[in-house]
Length: 314
Image (cartoon, rainbow, N blue to C red; front, side, top):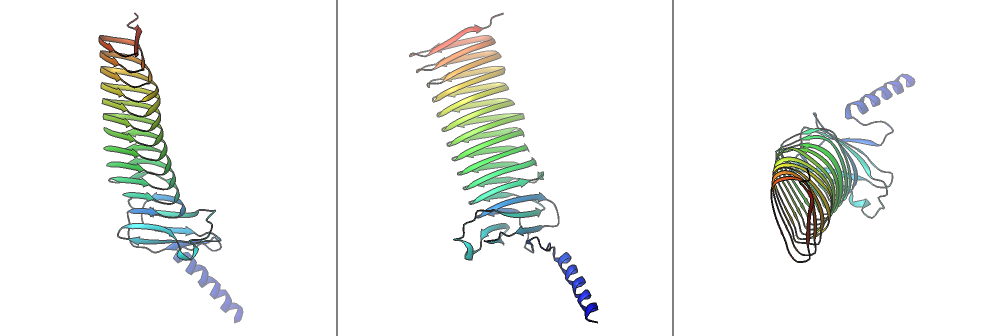
Protein backbone atom coordinates (compact mmCIF):
# COMPACT_ATOMS: atom_id res chain seq x y z
CA UNK A 1 0.00 0.00 0.00
CA UNK A 2 2.88 2.36 0.84
CA UNK A 3 4.47 1.65 -2.54
CA UNK A 4 1.21 2.31 -4.36
CA UNK A 5 0.68 5.55 -2.43
CA UNK A 6 4.17 6.77 -3.24
CA UNK A 7 3.63 5.94 -6.93
CA UNK A 8 0.37 7.91 -6.98
CA UNK A 9 2.09 10.85 -5.28
CA UNK A 10 4.85 10.88 -7.90
CA UNK A 11 2.33 10.77 -10.75
CA UNK A 12 0.36 13.62 -9.16
CA UNK A 13 3.56 15.65 -8.72
CA UNK A 14 4.54 15.18 -12.37
CA UNK A 15 1.06 16.19 -13.51
CA UNK A 16 1.17 19.35 -11.39
CA UNK A 17 4.55 20.31 -12.87
CA UNK A 18 3.20 19.87 -16.37
CA UNK A 19 0.11 21.96 -15.68
CA UNK A 20 2.02 24.88 -14.14
CA UNK A 21 4.72 24.82 -16.80
CA UNK A 22 7.65 24.34 -14.38
CA UNK A 23 10.48 22.26 -15.81
CA UNK A 24 11.78 19.84 -13.22
CA UNK A 25 15.42 20.33 -12.38
CA UNK A 26 15.92 23.23 -14.82
CA UNK A 27 15.36 26.17 -12.46
CA UNK A 28 12.81 27.65 -14.89
CA UNK A 29 9.83 29.42 -13.35
CA UNK A 30 6.62 30.10 -15.25
CA UNK A 31 4.77 33.20 -14.09
CA UNK A 32 1.10 34.12 -14.30
CA UNK A 33 0.93 37.85 -15.06
CA UNK A 34 -1.61 40.40 -16.35
CA UNK A 35 -1.59 41.35 -20.03
CA UNK A 36 1.23 43.63 -21.26
CA UNK A 37 2.52 45.05 -24.55
CA UNK A 38 5.67 46.81 -23.29
CA UNK A 39 8.87 45.59 -21.58
CA UNK A 40 11.21 47.59 -19.32
CA UNK A 41 14.48 46.11 -18.04
CA UNK A 42 16.43 47.38 -15.01
CA UNK A 43 18.64 44.34 -14.45
CA UNK A 44 21.00 41.92 -16.26
CA UNK A 45 18.84 39.92 -18.66
CA UNK A 46 18.90 37.84 -21.81
CA UNK A 47 15.46 38.33 -23.32
CA UNK A 48 14.04 35.81 -25.77
CA UNK A 49 10.92 37.38 -27.28
CA UNK A 50 8.39 35.70 -29.55
CA UNK A 51 5.13 37.14 -30.81
CA UNK A 52 2.23 34.81 -30.22
CA UNK A 53 -0.53 33.60 -27.95
CA UNK A 54 -1.15 32.70 -25.21
CA UNK A 55 0.99 35.14 -23.26
CA UNK A 56 3.72 33.55 -21.17
CA UNK A 57 6.75 34.59 -19.11
CA UNK A 58 9.41 32.11 -18.01
CA UNK A 59 12.55 32.86 -16.00
CA UNK A 60 15.64 30.79 -15.33
CA UNK A 61 17.00 32.24 -12.10
CA UNK A 62 20.72 32.45 -11.39
CA UNK A 63 22.47 30.53 -8.63
CA UNK A 64 23.42 33.59 -6.59
CA UNK A 65 20.69 36.17 -7.37
CA UNK A 66 17.06 36.43 -8.44
CA UNK A 67 15.07 38.48 -10.90
CA UNK A 68 11.56 39.70 -10.22
CA UNK A 69 8.95 40.30 -12.92
CA UNK A 70 5.83 42.38 -12.46
CA UNK A 71 3.29 44.19 -14.62
CA UNK A 72 2.50 47.86 -14.04
CA UNK A 73 -0.10 49.31 -16.37
CA UNK A 74 0.66 47.32 -19.50
CA UNK A 75 4.42 47.18 -18.95
CA UNK A 76 6.35 44.06 -17.95
CA UNK A 77 9.07 45.24 -15.56
CA UNK A 78 12.21 43.16 -15.00
CA UNK A 79 14.28 44.10 -11.97
CA UNK A 80 16.60 42.56 -9.39
CA UNK A 81 14.91 41.36 -6.22
CA UNK A 82 15.70 43.75 -3.36
CA UNK A 83 17.57 41.15 -1.31
CA UNK A 84 20.09 40.61 -4.14
CA UNK A 85 20.88 44.18 -5.23
CA UNK A 86 24.40 44.06 -3.75
CA UNK A 87 25.20 40.68 -5.30
CA UNK A 88 27.69 40.59 -8.18
CA UNK A 89 25.51 39.72 -11.17
CA UNK A 90 28.17 38.09 -13.33
CA UNK A 91 25.69 35.93 -15.19
CA UNK A 92 22.60 37.40 -16.86
CA UNK A 93 19.26 35.72 -16.29
CA UNK A 94 17.36 34.20 -19.22
CA UNK A 95 13.77 35.35 -19.70
CA UNK A 96 11.46 33.84 -22.32
CA UNK A 97 8.49 36.01 -23.25
CA UNK A 98 5.61 35.27 -25.59
CA UNK A 99 3.08 38.06 -26.13
CA UNK A 100 0.51 38.98 -28.79
CA UNK A 101 2.09 42.40 -29.41
CA UNK A 102 4.97 44.64 -28.39
CA UNK A 103 4.77 48.45 -28.53
CA UNK A 104 7.74 49.46 -26.41
CA UNK A 105 11.08 47.99 -25.32
CA UNK A 106 13.18 49.92 -22.80
CA UNK A 107 16.48 49.19 -21.08
CA UNK A 108 18.22 50.82 -18.13
CA UNK A 109 20.38 47.83 -17.26
CA UNK A 110 22.25 45.21 -19.27
CA UNK A 111 20.08 43.58 -21.91
CA UNK A 112 20.61 41.14 -24.74
CA UNK A 113 17.58 40.61 -26.98
CA UNK A 114 16.84 37.76 -29.36
CA UNK A 115 13.59 38.63 -31.09
CA UNK A 116 11.75 36.76 -33.79
CA UNK A 117 9.57 38.35 -36.48
CA UNK A 118 7.18 41.00 -35.17
CA UNK A 119 4.11 42.51 -36.81
CA UNK A 120 2.60 45.30 -34.77
CA UNK A 121 1.60 48.96 -34.69
CA UNK A 122 4.16 51.55 -33.61
CA UNK A 123 7.29 50.29 -31.84
CA UNK A 124 9.61 52.34 -29.61
CA UNK A 125 13.04 51.08 -28.56
CA UNK A 126 14.81 53.16 -25.91
CA UNK A 127 18.17 52.33 -24.39
CA UNK A 128 19.86 54.07 -21.47
CA UNK A 129 22.08 51.15 -20.49
CA UNK A 130 24.00 48.48 -22.39
CA UNK A 131 21.96 46.64 -25.01
CA UNK A 132 22.62 44.16 -27.80
CA UNK A 133 19.66 43.26 -30.00
CA UNK A 134 19.11 40.89 -32.89
CA UNK A 135 15.65 40.87 -34.46
CA UNK A 136 13.85 39.09 -37.24
CA UNK A 137 11.68 40.95 -39.75
CA UNK A 138 9.85 43.87 -38.12
CA UNK A 139 6.61 44.98 -39.79
CA UNK A 140 5.45 48.08 -37.90
CA UNK A 141 3.87 51.52 -38.31
CA UNK A 142 6.42 53.97 -36.90
CA UNK A 143 9.70 52.64 -35.51
CA UNK A 144 11.42 54.97 -33.04
CA UNK A 145 14.85 54.09 -31.68
CA UNK A 146 16.44 56.33 -29.05
CA UNK A 147 19.88 55.54 -27.63
CA UNK A 148 21.60 57.28 -24.75
CA UNK A 149 23.80 54.37 -23.71
CA UNK A 150 25.67 51.64 -25.54
CA UNK A 151 23.57 49.91 -28.20
CA UNK A 152 24.22 47.39 -30.95
CA UNK A 153 21.53 45.89 -33.14
CA UNK A 154 20.76 44.29 -36.48
CA UNK A 155 17.29 44.19 -38.04
CA UNK A 156 15.19 44.06 -41.17
CA UNK A 157 12.29 46.55 -41.08
CA UNK A 158 9.17 47.35 -43.04
CA UNK A 159 7.67 50.55 -41.63
CA UNK A 160 5.75 53.71 -42.49
CA UNK A 161 8.38 55.84 -40.74
CA UNK A 162 11.72 55.27 -39.00
CA UNK A 163 13.19 57.73 -36.47
CA UNK A 164 16.68 57.02 -35.18
CA UNK A 165 18.14 59.31 -32.51
CA UNK A 166 21.56 58.62 -31.03
CA UNK A 167 23.26 60.44 -28.16
CA UNK A 168 25.37 57.51 -27.02
CA UNK A 169 27.46 54.82 -28.69
CA UNK A 170 25.53 52.98 -31.40
CA UNK A 171 26.46 50.33 -33.94
CA UNK A 172 23.71 49.09 -36.24
CA UNK A 173 22.96 47.12 -39.37
CA UNK A 174 19.56 47.94 -40.87
CA UNK A 175 17.75 46.88 -44.03
CA UNK A 176 14.60 49.00 -44.34
CA UNK A 177 11.62 49.20 -46.65
CA UNK A 178 10.28 52.57 -45.61
CA UNK A 179 9.10 55.80 -47.27
CA UNK A 180 10.26 58.16 -44.51
CA UNK A 181 13.58 57.78 -42.67
CA UNK A 182 15.19 60.24 -40.25
CA UNK A 183 18.60 59.69 -38.62
CA UNK A 184 19.97 62.21 -36.10
CA UNK A 185 23.34 61.56 -34.45
CA UNK A 186 24.86 63.52 -31.58
CA UNK A 187 27.02 60.68 -30.30
CA UNK A 188 29.17 57.97 -31.85
CA UNK A 189 27.42 56.09 -34.64
CA UNK A 190 28.66 53.30 -36.89
CA UNK A 191 25.92 52.31 -39.31
CA UNK A 192 25.25 50.05 -42.26
CA UNK A 193 21.90 51.32 -43.48
CA UNK A 194 20.06 50.17 -46.60
CA UNK A 195 16.70 51.73 -47.44
CA UNK A 196 14.36 51.07 -50.37
CA UNK A 197 10.87 52.22 -51.39
CA UNK A 198 11.76 55.54 -49.85
CA UNK A 199 10.25 58.98 -50.26
CA UNK A 200 12.46 60.96 -47.85
CA UNK A 201 15.82 60.08 -46.29
CA UNK A 202 17.21 62.66 -43.83
CA UNK A 203 20.58 62.33 -42.12
CA UNK A 204 21.82 64.94 -39.63
CA UNK A 205 25.19 64.38 -37.96
CA UNK A 206 26.55 66.43 -35.07
CA UNK A 207 28.80 63.75 -33.59
CA UNK A 208 31.14 61.07 -34.93
CA UNK A 209 29.65 59.08 -37.80
CA UNK A 210 31.07 56.16 -39.74
CA UNK A 211 28.58 55.09 -42.38
CA UNK A 212 27.86 52.73 -45.24
CA UNK A 213 24.53 53.95 -46.61
CA UNK A 214 22.60 52.72 -49.63
CA UNK A 215 19.32 54.53 -50.30
CA UNK A 216 16.78 54.51 -53.09
CA UNK A 217 14.19 57.24 -52.63
CA UNK A 218 12.83 60.53 -54.01
CA UNK A 219 14.59 63.05 -51.76
CA UNK A 220 17.86 62.75 -49.83
CA UNK A 221 19.11 65.36 -47.37
CA UNK A 222 22.48 64.99 -45.61
CA UNK A 223 23.88 67.55 -43.15
CA UNK A 224 27.22 67.10 -41.41
CA UNK A 225 28.30 69.36 -38.58
CA UNK A 226 30.54 66.83 -36.88
CA UNK A 227 33.07 64.19 -37.93
CA UNK A 228 31.80 62.03 -40.78
CA UNK A 229 33.42 59.35 -42.88
CA UNK A 230 32.29 56.46 -45.03
CA UNK A 231 30.46 55.64 -48.24
CA UNK A 232 27.03 56.61 -49.54
CA UNK A 233 25.39 55.12 -52.65
CA UNK A 234 22.24 57.11 -53.40
CA UNK A 235 19.54 56.83 -56.04
CA UNK A 236 17.14 59.77 -55.79
CA UNK A 237 15.33 62.46 -57.70
CA UNK A 238 16.91 65.21 -55.59
CA UNK A 239 19.83 65.27 -53.18
CA UNK A 240 21.04 68.08 -50.94
CA UNK A 241 24.34 67.69 -49.12
CA UNK A 242 25.68 70.25 -46.67
CA UNK A 243 29.01 69.89 -44.86
CA UNK A 244 30.23 72.23 -42.16
CA UNK A 245 32.27 69.60 -40.35
CA UNK A 246 35.21 67.34 -41.04
CA UNK A 247 35.94 63.88 -42.36
CA UNK A 248 36.36 61.96 -45.58
CA UNK A 249 33.38 60.81 -47.61
CA UNK A 250 32.70 59.00 -50.86
CA UNK A 251 29.34 59.74 -52.46
CA UNK A 252 27.86 58.00 -55.49
CA UNK A 253 24.71 59.77 -56.69
CA UNK A 254 22.37 58.84 -59.53
CA UNK A 255 19.31 61.03 -60.13
CA UNK A 256 18.08 64.37 -61.43
CA UNK A 257 19.40 67.18 -59.21
CA UNK A 258 22.45 67.24 -56.95
CA UNK A 259 23.25 70.23 -54.73
CA UNK A 260 26.38 70.07 -52.58
CA UNK A 261 27.76 72.77 -50.28
CA UNK A 262 31.09 71.96 -48.63
CA UNK A 263 32.21 74.60 -46.13
CA UNK A 264 34.08 72.46 -43.64
CA UNK A 265 37.42 70.72 -43.70
CA UNK A 266 36.25 67.50 -45.28
CA UNK A 267 37.61 65.69 -48.30
CA UNK A 268 34.74 64.53 -50.49
CA UNK A 269 34.90 62.29 -53.54
CA UNK A 270 31.67 62.72 -55.49
CA UNK A 271 30.63 60.60 -58.48
CA UNK A 272 27.45 61.69 -60.24
CA UNK A 273 25.13 60.61 -63.00
CA UNK A 274 22.57 63.41 -63.01
CA UNK A 275 20.93 66.24 -64.94
CA UNK A 276 21.87 69.20 -62.74
CA UNK A 277 24.90 69.57 -60.47
CA UNK A 278 25.44 72.63 -58.24
CA UNK A 279 28.61 72.56 -56.15
CA UNK A 280 29.99 75.14 -53.69
CA UNK A 281 33.16 74.70 -51.69
CA UNK A 282 34.83 77.00 -49.15
CA UNK A 283 37.02 76.81 -46.07
CA UNK A 284 39.87 74.27 -46.30
CA UNK A 285 37.82 71.55 -47.94
CA UNK A 286 38.52 69.55 -51.07
CA UNK A 287 35.85 68.33 -53.47
CA UNK A 288 36.66 65.88 -56.25
CA UNK A 289 33.92 65.34 -58.85
CA UNK A 290 33.65 62.64 -61.50
CA UNK A 291 30.93 61.09 -63.64
CA UNK A 292 28.42 62.90 -65.86
CA UNK A 293 26.11 65.91 -65.42
CA UNK A 294 24.15 67.77 -68.12
CA UNK A 295 24.15 71.16 -66.39
CA UNK A 296 26.88 72.22 -63.94
CA UNK A 297 27.46 75.25 -61.72
CA UNK A 298 30.57 75.57 -59.51
CA UNK A 299 31.64 78.12 -56.91
CA UNK A 300 34.71 77.85 -54.69
CA UNK A 301 36.35 80.24 -52.25
CA UNK A 302 39.00 80.47 -49.55
CA UNK A 303 41.68 77.81 -49.96
CA UNK A 304 39.16 75.18 -50.94
CA UNK A 305 39.36 73.35 -54.22
CA UNK A 306 36.85 71.83 -56.62
CA UNK A 307 38.47 69.34 -58.99
CA UNK A 308 36.10 68.53 -61.86
CA UNK A 309 38.73 67.27 -64.30
CA UNK A 310 37.14 63.80 -64.34
CA UNK A 311 33.61 65.09 -64.95
CA UNK A 312 32.00 64.59 -68.37
CA UNK A 313 35.02 62.80 -69.82
CA UNK A 314 33.33 61.06 -72.73
